[in-house]
Image (tube, rainbow, N blue to C red; front, top):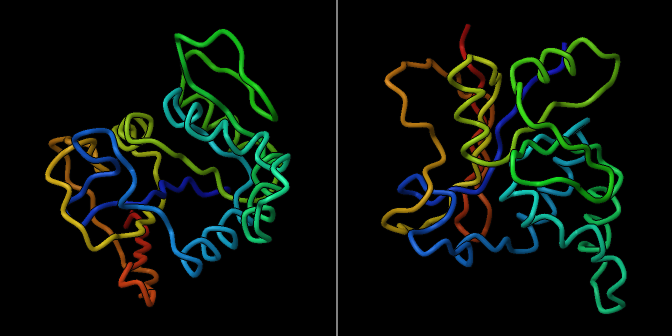
Length: 187
């Protein structure tokens, strides 16, 4: 059965974006970016909400920029064909290799798990991940922890009154002092 992973960059104080909505603190260096390129190869489908979808739209046409470096071009070549499922009640259409779903996250995950296919079911975005976590659907949490305190914003972890035991599966420290942590949900 395909694993459901929630993976994003996070500040040391637990936020995926700062209080001003900024992400400038999480711009990956070359080593971290190369890691993300390797990680996306293991994803079979990416689930996201409207905000993350709109942020990631850039990658649908980024390859048209002749000034792109090779790693950025490689990321784009992997991201564009990746199947994406966008959960939104306000969008009426989506672009690229994406399809729009207006509800039923748990049902969609179960459907994707039942389908033949390889690669993880990746979830991006805190709101969607909170819904999946509340239903006990996340198998792994993957955090790229940046050495910065942003003081508020959107938290990585859902603020639920529910205990979830985790097993540390992998760690990696990059030269930029960014630390990757991969935890499996203990069941």
